[in-house]
Amino acid sequence: MRIVVAEDLYLLRDGMVHLIEACGHEVVATASTGPETLDALLAHRPDVSVIDVRMPPTQSDEGLRAALAARRELPGLPVLVLSQHVEQLYARELLADGSGGVGYLLKESVFDADQFIGSLERVAAGGTAMDPAVIAKLLSASPPERGLSQLTEREYEVLGLMAEGLSNQAIGRRLFLSDSAISKYTTSMFGKLRIADDDDTNRRVRAVLTYLNQP
Image (cartoon, rainbow, N blue to C red; front, side):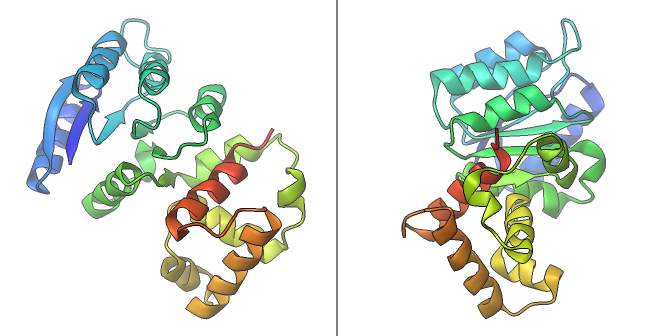
């Protein structure tokens, strides 16, 4: 994969670059400010980017706003936000176009290299990788959509784990259920959400975005 890394802390940025390259991927550009991030994304059109939220010049939300601006210019540009903070409004906007290729992880929740690289690969492939704390924040004050309100408690639980980026097998292990049981729950869930029988990856992304982008 061709990757852009946007992080203003030198040691963390350098560490991510070394980790990504050690795993066989290419870092095509790095950035330490919001404007540099936008320029790098538009110039290189990477397979995926890793972007911090709070960057110079004001240390507020420059990184996330750069990601949003880039996706407006290049719809579906894969972005993994890696931050210490949950910016609820901008996170919703990042999900709003419904095109997938989005991740939002809290730095404190990334425990190993495999988890980090796996999230990058999932987002690059058009999927999602969402931190449970980010999901909780996004859903904290939102009534469920009509379709979501029809889901059973177990179906809603499966969908929440799907939003974290877990496969059916991983969801089954988490809930102590068989693969066939998870498959039945997801099939029922897709029907209730009126998601057409398309390829499985596309259906999962659409279901997750419905879940995360509640009004």
